[in-house]
Length: 110
Image (cartoon, rainbow, N blue to C red):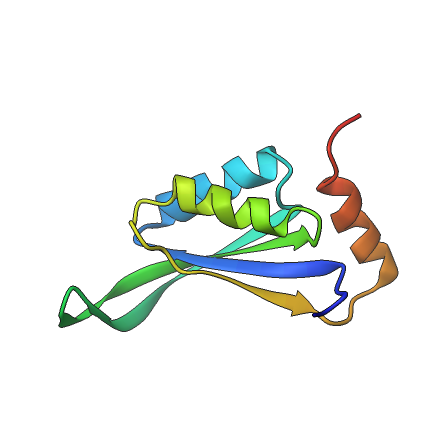
């Protein structure tokens, strides 16, 4: 198990509006310190027994270990797909001042 202080959580959505809505909600709820939205990207996937192709938007969120799992659950609640992609990667190194900001931003308000 990693002891990373900062995590990068990603999901893909069918539209930019969906990605933006998720980003606004979770940053506003202080489950993420910030978000980046990129796309569209072409995707090829297997779904419901057949090959599919489409475009997706990626939302990448920076969060702390303390709220990572709550963030993942909230993304799943907000997401338009029944089984969304939600993955997380530990940020193995970053400036201490950046990690401090992420942890401070995702802490519950006093």
